[in-house]
Image (cartoon, rainbow, N blue to C red; front, side):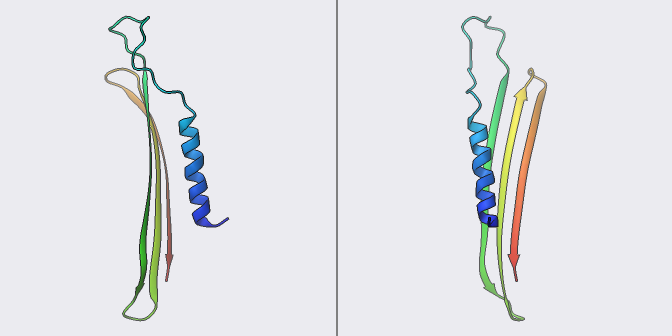
Length: 96
């Protein structure tokens, strides 16, 4: 499996895993108005950066690909406290 395919497969698996969680309900009619249900927020981002082939003055060429994948989950315990988990995957492929 090529590196580009591995990055894409990792991103897709993380996206599917994220979407498998049930949506958060903002309010429940059976609970008192002062009590809010715990909130969990998920964020995911993927940023590919490419520097196209460039000729070097001393001879040769340079080409680089960078991929940044981020996933964060934050759970609000109350107004003052939050628990979070963050995962990141950074990949760089430079060819001289």
